Amino acid sequence: MGYQEKYNQWLSFEGLDESLKANLKEMDEKEKEDAFYTNLEFGTAGMRGILGAGTNRLNIYTIRKANVGFAKYVLTLPNGKERGVAIGYDNRHMSYRFAIESAKVLATYGIKSYLFESLRPTPELSFAVRHLGCAGGIMITASHNPKEYNGYKVYDDTGCQLIPEWADQVVDYVNQVEDELNVEVCSDEDAYPYITYIGEEVDEAYYKEVMAIEINPGMDKKDFKIVFSPQHGTSNIPVRTCLERLGYDLIPVLAQCAPDPDFTNTKSPNPEVEASYELAIKKAKEVDADVVVICDPDGDRLGVVAKHDGDYVLMSGNQSAAVYLEYILSQLKEKGTLPDNAVMYNTIVTSDLGELVARSYGVDVEKTLTGFKFIGDKIRKYEKTGEKQFVFGYEESYGCVIKDFVRDKDAIQAVLTAAEAGNYFKKQGKDLVDVLNDLYAKHGTFKETQIALSKAGVEGAQQIKAIMAGLRANAPAEIAGYKVVSVEDYETSIKVADGQETVIDLPKSNVLKYYLEDGSWIAARPSGTEPKCKFYFSIKGNNQQDALDKTNIFHKAMMEMIGETEY
Image 1 (spheres, rainbow, N blue to C red):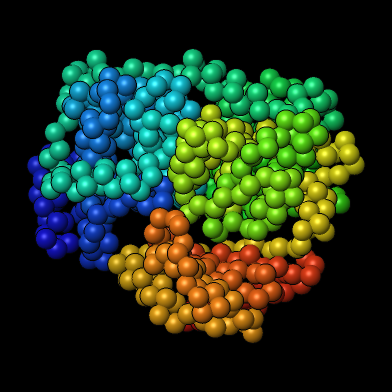
Image 2 (cartoon, one colour):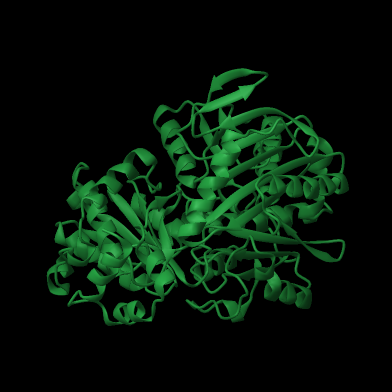
């Protein structure tokens, strides 16, 4: 069925939601095609899309269809009906409605659900799954995406997002639903006995675990100021509750504390975007804060700005994670509590600096594909075998987890770690940037950047495929005059170095990574949650200026290679 037929099918559906019908009538031909040319698919972090009418949009019908797939998956699990599913949601448009629709579809299949009474951060949903002994979890969120988006993430019984093996089972069930408009959903009255509302009891259990991650709980906190923004999202109450109970001087950016689906008082809800820090830095200058911390709307990512030499310096996710690692591992070693079999996890597109820090303390490092579910899966594996002990996990995209009572990124834990590390190092006469510079002096200087090429719609999807196919067919021998010494292709699971092929022991993924003779690397991958092709740069330099200069050269060279003049 072509997009026009699907459009007409929706338009003529008698029971169609009135707001979606109005949306259909406003569409021009290009909008119709983009809304119906394909179905929303699960990516690296579940299903995410623009709100509106269509099979390629997020709406009550595509949400119901997804829940049919997840419900059928839950029914295959031991005591899946009785154990039930925990459901959380953020501050976005339609989040609460989608959460209710999810619970009703589950109830239609006789599955219990535990629905948060109001918005909660993603990491608390992950925690709730394990705390309540559920068979799985659902989080309604689009994380750091713009206000036009929402999303749907599913979790296993450990609070980890479904790994591909299990997500594929859900997708198979979803694809069996031929008509999302006619999914059977029980009435509110019939669903009610299957739904239990949860709130304070889970909150308090989660807060207790978060506060217990302090390594130096007795440290004086009175001379350390933190400015905090939840970016209109879910982290406001958890962060302020935990840090204030622990005695931190936490100053909120009040204009960004109210849960607002339009993100009215921020230029971007994404900590990766520099403009998102404007109000927080302004407040920091007013109160002479030591550190600025901002969370994305669903509370799984944290951005950090540190006061350094009188200015406020934004740290990347790679940089802040390296500093957290230095603090955590140095303190555990000093106290004699660093396990002999400790392991740290990061991904194939994170900087080498964190790995060097970990190994300097004798901590093993294992890499995963992009997507925190792979880190959660690693934690599960060693939890069962006891072979290694988890001490830290992170991605370059501002997400980390310190203690594994959560199996997803946890910005609430990260805020506490940033605060504790900042306070500790201040007492040593250093700020977080000073510590980062010390790490550069010890391990080498790295500059990590990213170019995300937006390629929306049908044409955009084709362009992204063409970019990756072109790079795969024409592997560069050199980039910007630097020899490519090895290439990793995660789609074919082959690494080529010195003319020799070796197998990459990771699940297949559409990622290419080029290692250069100077110790730098560049990776390319399509985003699993946005219509973008992403390029990751980890450039090693003799000093910070050298790394910056080389980064600019590599940016230009890679974009010229794929025929992009604007980026």
